[in-house]
Length: 118
Image (tube, rainbow, N blue to C red; front, top):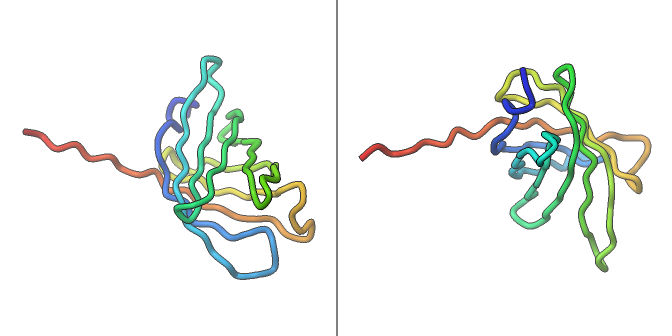
């Protein structure tokens, strides 16, 4: 599998980095920059925007991410995904100020874009 195979839009299902059973949903869009590194954009629960960049090797995708929270505070973290198939990513993540006893989890399913033929 190549990094180009990862480009696309994914439906995200995840759990936060804490002891709660709170689940979230969202969209993850992956693209490539001029150096063929991954550029990531998340939209979580239709409200929180997150951004990141990373790299892909041996079916492992690593993305350093950030977002702005309350009072415009910048939060940073890292997400690591095993690429199980070109359409399925299984991962975990951690934020700098998150609960160190837990990891967040995410599963990402590639969205199929259908085009209509006239």
